[in-house]
Image (cartoon, rainbow, N blue to C red; front, top):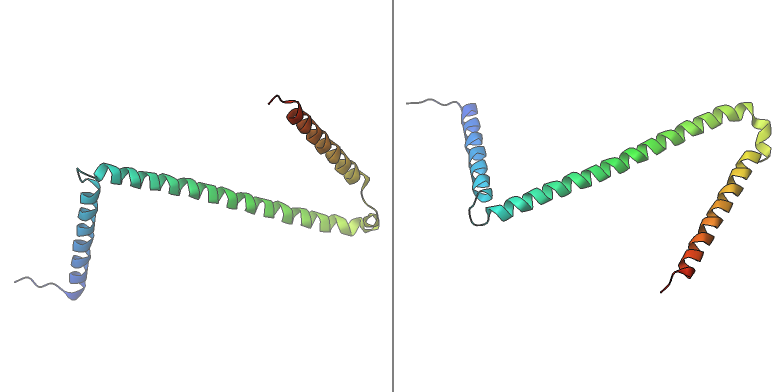
Length: 122
């Protein structure tokens, strides 16, 4: 009666399989007894997946940005290093001053924090 080609048969079975799968999934989620819990669980898992993906993508993008700025700094250093190779023997005074200032600042912060913890009433 109907002639169905071999290629059309596989497409027909795929459609039937997809339809049956969607129907079973909808029955599972729209079940009047436990459907609300299943939908809430699916929603919570989707939210968790979105947040963890956002966290991973943010970390990867920061990492990539830091790597790129480090590579740019190395390139700038290499370009400047050829022109200023004579000054490479001695450390930079500005760098030493910044390091000293940073050490003094962190020492003040630590002292302030230790004073606050020792003065607090129990």
